[in-house]
Length: 186
Image (cartoon, rainbow, N blue to C red):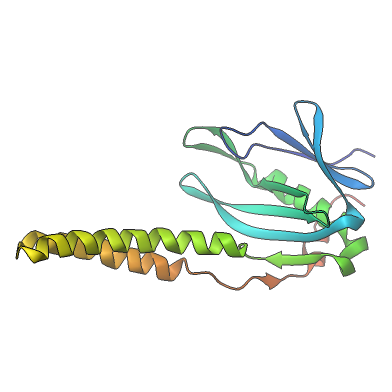
């Protein structure tokens, strides 16, 4: 039986990683050296979320072990500045195989869909920063009665809108069997 693997690179500063679903564990190898590994029975959480990949979005899978070891991989892999390779087809197969293997320990694993809390706070802050810049621009010119103050209003409105649509939403559990059923591996 072959070991399912998935190759991913998260950023320019990260090495290409090979994530392997071994018989007893999920491992990450970089440049031929195992960097991280989590045994299936030590998996605490499998989290699926949407993340950015340049101008596009991608599905991210975060595995967390009981000792806080983390493995992260996504459906797009970094190639060059502004260029991400779409690997959604291979990601889908690998994710299904991962869920099929994790099912044996499903009672001790939290299967969560949604952003981690810290990530959910970061994105609205970008919108709020844009709104603050727009407001500062408008107030600066408004003090002098300059009509150029109106130029800051769209920045304020867009920033507040972004903060609202990117606000944190509660993560929710999902059924791992949904993904495991699509796996080609036993």
